[in-house]
Each structure stands twice: as structure tokens, then as C-alpha cells.
Image 1 (cartoon, rainbow, N blue to C red):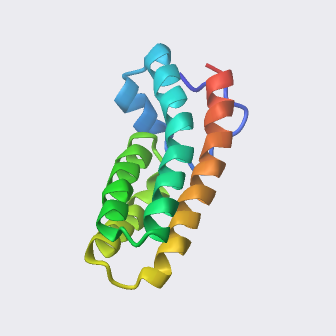
Image 2 (cartoon, rainbow, N blue to C red):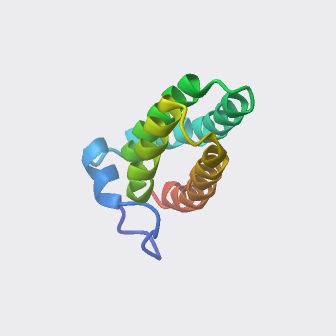
Amino acid sequence: MFENLKTKPEHIDLSVLEEITDGSSDLLHDMLDIFFLQVPKFTMEMEEANSSGEYAKLGAIAHKAKSTVATMGITALIQKMKDFELLAKSGERPEEYAAYIDLFKTNCDKAIKELKDIKSNL
């Protein structure tokens, strides 16, 4: 499925994508399109919830984002998003939340570049 890739992605575990899609390029295309739309939405929603002090809501968004990055094989972010989810739901250390949101955005932006390359080589 990924034999046409020129370089191995640094931020994506290809085995996760292969397993979830069962090797279906069509399914992967659909998943990628959805992911490309979800990342900016999650980022905006997390920033808004953080700004307004809605920490339980922020934790719920982080939970959804965690599931999404896991599905897309962005394994380095899974534990960080789980930590963020639990921290936000507790309302503790809110001064750290912006850094978690930035970490999500930065890592997803890097992953999106790799995923676009993957998509163009399917």
C-alpha cells in the first residue's frame, strides 16, 4: 500500500494506517480528507474552550483529538493528548493548556504534510 513512498514518515506509524484501512486506498483517502478538516476544527475549539475557561469541554475535545491522532497513526501524540485530557478535565494547572494545544497543532501540522505525501502516492 505504501511502497511508492520515497521517504518513510517520521510522524506517522504506517502500520496503524494499514491495519485500520485493511489496505484499502479508498478508505484511507476518505480518512485523510476527514482528518485534514478535523485538525483545524479541534485546534480552534480547544483554543476557544481554553480562553473561556471551559476546562471540562476542553478535556472532552482533547479526548476526541486523542482518538483521532491514534487512528491516524500519530503515536507520539497519543499519551500527550491523554495527559492533556485528564489535566483539563481536572481543571488543574490551566497555565499549561496552551502549550498542549500548541503541541497538538505543531505535531498534527507535521503529520498532515506527511499524510498529504502519502495520499498523493497511493
